[in-house]
Length: 213
Length: 213
Image 1: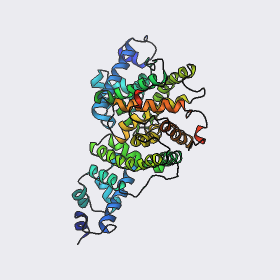
Image 2: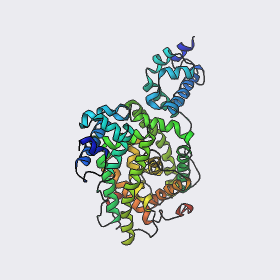
Image 3: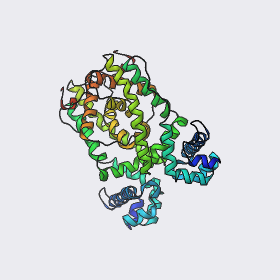
Image 4: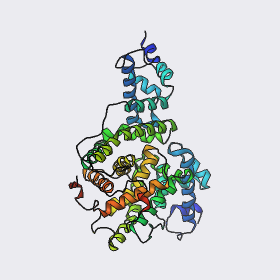
């Protein structure tokens, strides 16, 4: 079976085998290309040259640059990452925030995720894949809130999806919208303020109807 | 004095006069072009045709597409917008969040700001202008927190810059990163949770050092 046949028939080669290696090589080339040239400058030709996978294979299996981006995001979503488990809500939220800072506060680490976020403005398919990636990623994070509820550190019914997004949001916001510098104090502040809001019951359903003023 | 002469010599025509009208027409053409074609597709030729301002004038006064974008952002920052003043911290933060939803929850209203955010990924000059725009905009918002402190609705020393960003951040985050739908309940939740965190003292200096767990 040729390399191209294996690539064209996912599942015929065991996980970690030739198909997986090809996919990873292509993914690496996509990330490098995005970081170097951005979405507007990324071509199938570049990915072929960089990955060593023949252009014909790339077109047959991924179809287009959009298909390459989508698969790179799908592959990123297949990792075994789990959210921090420090034993406390404050500790877990702080560790989550620090992971965002470690990525977006570092030019090299930020290159690929930033390029995906940028590409989503220009490609609806990439936007859809990015939505799927973050939906799955934040679903994993919700265990942080579930454990906090079990420990009595968060009220039952706390909106876990909103909590884990609220911790990351001010950091992403500065990195990709207001373009302000990031740092550990900001991460700590974001985590501490969301934890305080959780304890105050601000993430329970209908809390938004109340006003304490 | 020809139209081009007036354009080339800012200040020689009174505010609201021909220079201001030319600048506004050019800005309108830039916004329309960004919304229609995005930054990669925006050209000086397009802006000339759309605005009725001669291409030679555009090149002389603005230099390039980047110069056109920067000036459009500068002009946006010269508006008379003031933050809401509802009489309560909760009400003001909720009104701020609703303004974000009104913009980014509406495809037409979102087009121009989204295009600027997208362009900043590809143009360092645009990123710099965007940073300046948001820095000035959020500086205006800080009066919301100052008034809350004066009314006794927020502890003295509350980090106003962080508070006003934290309210908007989860909404921008969904609009431009996770690509999730927005809505009034999300705006209310963001405002209520930040207000609760403010009351809990989570935006005071060094609060991040504490853990209530």
